Length: 315
Image (cartoon, rainbow, N blue to C red; front, top):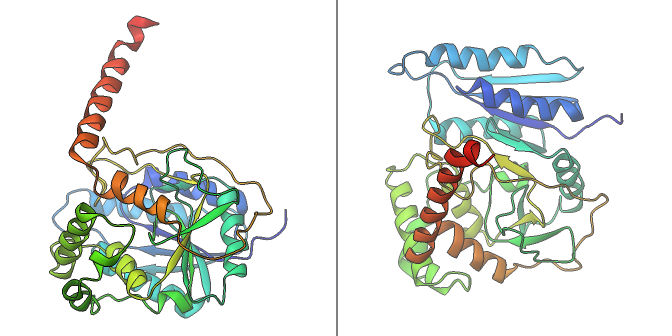
């Protein structure tokens, strides 16, 4: 097998079971360079020290020939600080990388997709990142392999040092964006969407939400950046549940999404530009669904649970 030269970053914490599944997929491409970021256990969580230790032991058992670099914290830094400082460390060592968290399991074509696009858009300052996520639920937005979006989805992604340098951890851009009416002028946001992001960004700014991902999204928007999204979903998040930091709601339509694969080599769009219709759908379906949509989801969830209970009797 041809050596896989693109550095792969794995962010781990306290979930050895999901970590093992992600690591198993990484093992299929046997990257030559693996960089591991780990947070430390919380002192008030019984048993977490052992879970963190078990997750780290999985790294020691990597059985292919690769250079492993580790950035492990002895104390708990929390989601925001651990990921941000970890990626700062990554980009002192490598100019670009593929990044996976311990609950994001990709299709194997995700890695070649990222590698090809990291090379193609290496010097395009408008492109902030490449994502493996597609939240269009079967709606094909392009005849090409991917399209461009304002949303920076981070359940399996890749980026460059030149883009990560724009990460605004202190959200210095937020007061001006908030007070200038910038959100209201975005073509993909309706009034409900504007209210959603005003509420979220303000909560993150006031440290009521411990999130690096929202800070990264704002960094992209304030720098007029775009992400690349595949025309089929390439990564599934298996971490929804009570042990998750943010993805606790198991009813979410984003939980355990099916994955597909991409045909390589990729078919590239001839021009770079936001797919506004796709972003409107993402905003209205994923981030700020209507009350009717929320009720529909609730009904679908209960019907699915009922079917699961009755399935043995039906069979």
